[in-house]
Image (cartoon, rainbow over all chains, first blue to last red; front, top):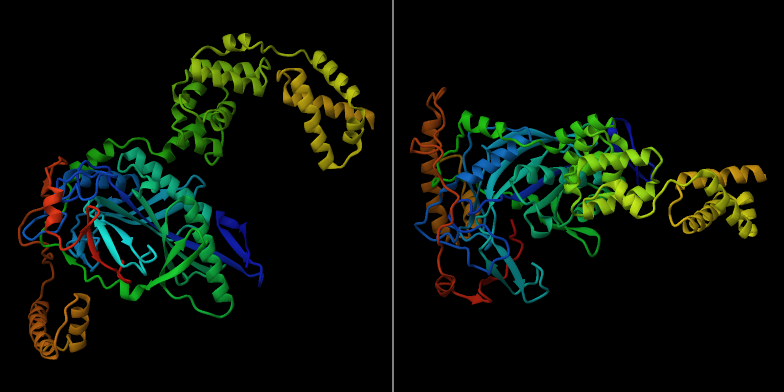
Length: 497
Length: 100
């Protein structure tokens, strides 16, 4: 079955089933685990380091040897609170709990986590599209060791045995539990982008999905448009990239709509995303899995950060992406949801853009360059005054958009002034009568193409417009202004009809 | 014996804890664990309004250490204690359907 997405009121999306024509709404809540960027592990002094030789960063505490005792890392609390406050959570007195299960990735046979009293509760995250996604909690827990399944098929089922590396066991994590406020696969990806930006800004994590320091599970359900109750959800795991996340949500929604439309029920379960096959597969049933027999960790005392500590974190909070977008959009005179604004902040070019606008550069033009022409290295070191000068030359008609792009690239490399570069490259504003002469000459050279251009359908005309524009650009060595060329072609065509 | 705890409860907990209990052991532990829960019932019957829950017997909070590397243990020594080792890692039996 194919699903088509349609925006409805309130920025939500519905999926329309092609089988029945019914409208459904996707409801997604994301759980994100991120490794904190500490020097050492959560409860011991072993290095928190990705990619080291197996079992070199281990000690009696993270190996679960008898008689060893955990001691909480100060920096874990600091980073967890920074993240929590950035997500507008309140920091609460919290306790640690043991989550008991038998699996060799934890040598203690339990994972220390926070259960009924987590450190950060009740926050939110604003997406660039204006959606506010609630954050239920963001709690501290320890990461597990890394299993490699050997023999058999190499997958969990059918493996003959497993090999375990405990370097990652005890690495500090924060699990961020989002509320089910996401309504579209793209929105889920945007949420992760935004969360990653916050993690990087606060220094809480390096947030690398490819190295597993940021991991995403998606709770997906569907309901008929208008329903207020949530449908039965499935938890989708093994999402190793943003692409997987989007595809898995879409697949899962389609699977659930299909089941419901044929009168079946959704079974609450954990499902694994298979990127190669492009589908999810059932794991174990949730009921069995959740019998973790949590109880308070007797080896750790409660955590109760002082009001002073929390206030110090708030005072030192760097500007967060949402606030940076607001500031840039205001200065540039554009909507905060503009793609160029989002990209400028993503690329850390918002300060440059603000300074360039302050130096007299046109806001929209500056943002266009940031979005399309400044993706490479070195852009952040551009001089705002000369960048503003370039934009002014362009708006004044002394440089075409194409020429401005070329000059800008040279400015990034050499740091020289735009007028100097333009003169060196021989970029001079082309006299309009000169350009018209060149265009008329080229039209005369290709009478058949010109006739087709004048009388052909839209598709044909579009193609031939490219043909003539290409010739003109070649003849003028790229100095012609694309807009002026289009205008001349159109006026000649109108005259010939 | 506590009305709260059945033999089946004990059997389930034993299963989760990977304990293989005999019939006699199941009976005995049901009775003993029931007595523990009965004691907890006694506490629950008291008027404890206004008494904060005890998170830890020691009146301490925020016991923290600095984020500084401390020498761990030697890998060869660690692995020499393991029943089975391969490729510098611990070798464990196949895992079936027990992923958390």
